[in-house]
Image (cartoon, rainbow, N blue to C red; front, side):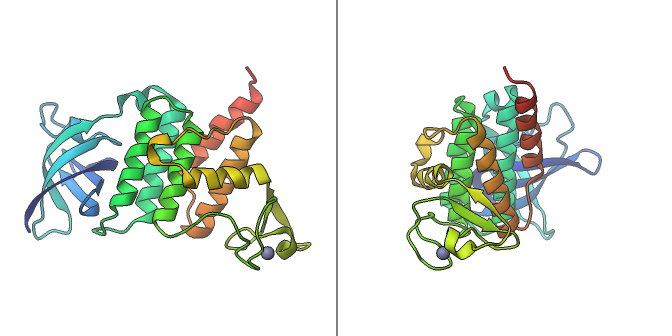
Amino acid sequence: MPAYRDQGIVLRCKLYRDNDSLVTLFLINHGKVAAVGRGVRNPKSPLNGGLYPLSYSGFELYRGRSSLESITTADVIRGFGKIRGDLDRIGWASVLAEVVDECFSDHDPAPEAFYILVAGLQALNEGRHPPSAAMAAIWQLLRAAGFVDRFDYCPHCGVRLDGPLLWVSGAKDPSCPLCAGSKRTKTFSSGAVKTVNRWLEATPDKFGGVEVRGRLIQEMVDWLSMTLASQIHRIPKSLGFINQLLDQEVEEPR
Ligand SMILES: [Zn+2]
């Protein structure tokens, strides 16, 4: 199968050699693929628009002897141009792309995750509340990759949860107050637990429908960060940027 067509999202794009781009694509039928777009620094290159980061494009690729595939055509299907007009949206869209990049392996198709990613970008592009829309999509991506599931029962003792969750430092996941005992912990409120469960239940076209506001945003970002650190062992760089934006909001109340 040297040449093939597929559709996908541009997760990353960086300059490579003199005139080329090294891109990471997340394709519907071929999963994550590293590929080279040749001559893209030429303003007249037909590849330009379709390789813009976070674009949803149709691709024609060629697999030669090199481990990198070559992109022969890239046509934009949805550019999600409104995301670029707002720092909060760009930040959250970048977290989405980084999480997909970390959670899925090369050449391993994950169509469910692909549609979750597209729905998350679409919700951000439509101007839905960025933290709420993006975090709903990210929790569903983590579930699609097999890292998390609903928080209905304590993962340690199996008791039904209807209150806050506690996270003992160094543990893999949070637990009920009884299991946490007197160890040093971070607490996630029952409101946070309910929100994660509702985000996990949402159909992708409703991402952003369950909104978090005020201090609950930072609580949800902290919980997401701890989950990413314990499950994929890396906190996305763009989540650091989101935390800076949240700090600014606290310092400059409007
Ligand atoms: Zn327990």
